[in-house]
Length: 121
Ligand code: FES
Image 1: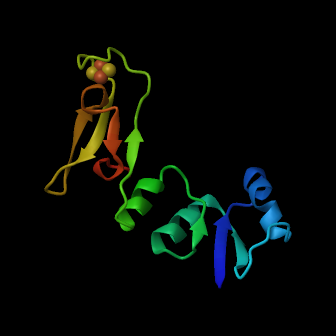
Image 2: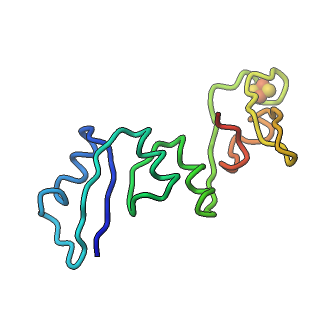
């Protein structure tokens, strides 16, 4: 069986996949081919389901999870002014049921949200 493992050519990915790429890991019947490309391309390929295994960015994960019907959660913790809902320094856009968007205070509605609830673009 052939599979592709896609990752970026940066140093940490090169370190993680060195053993596989150089034949140092027994793969049995599995024939592994590596695809090296930039993270934006990997994110797009993940949305298309192009590779069996791929690296993706944190930003892409909720989109890919939604594509496969898998849940995702995102913590939007950051420096909050008051932490009690009074200063509006922590607003974040979330999707409406009707397809629009509105803002919620992450200190009140979060800080953990379902990935599919957030407006990412
Ligand atoms: S931190 Fe002040 S409203 Fe959320």
